[in-house]
Length: 222
Image 1 (cartoon, rainbow, N blue to C red):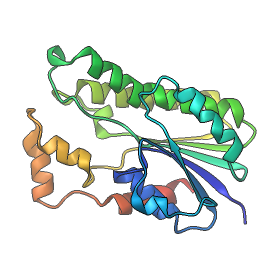
Image 2: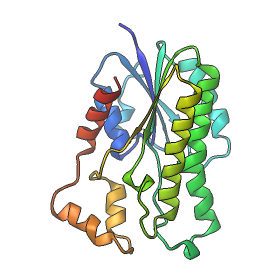
Image 3: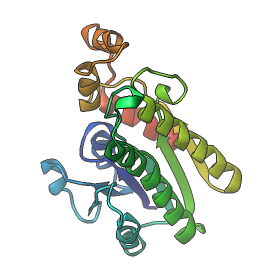
């Protein structure tokens, strides 16, 4: 049985956690979670199928922490799921702090580039798939979401350029739609012009289940 390694950022909650739950039901997957913390359920997974790489994506030594991946990858195929991102602060541009700007760049942009670069540098001889969990916000201007919209658009284009440079590998920009997650709760509790639309999505039960979305994406990229 051929093993495939999945590397997932933000795997401790929301869609990232759902990816892990789906993949752990399969015997041909080895998951590396790059997250700040691990869930109680994930603590009980076998080391044969799951590895927790504790890392804060705002950490300036993230590139050094990635070196462990060379020692633990299994199989001849790797799939990187770029899932982690932050939407805060939801503010007008004039109110954004320098710290908030730096944090968004580190989490939503720099960490993705560092992980992608690492895999292309050290595993270019293997089958590589890169999956960017993007958003409708990457293509639509939403007031008070300047950092989130622009960072999502940035990585979307980064993956398109990467695809043009590395035609032997696969690159995906996948918009999962609006899901029932902590991020959505944070959005509904924020103050911005379109907040009512997001509140109505919850009220009208139009939010997707992260587990359903995770399974759909896994089936799409297999």
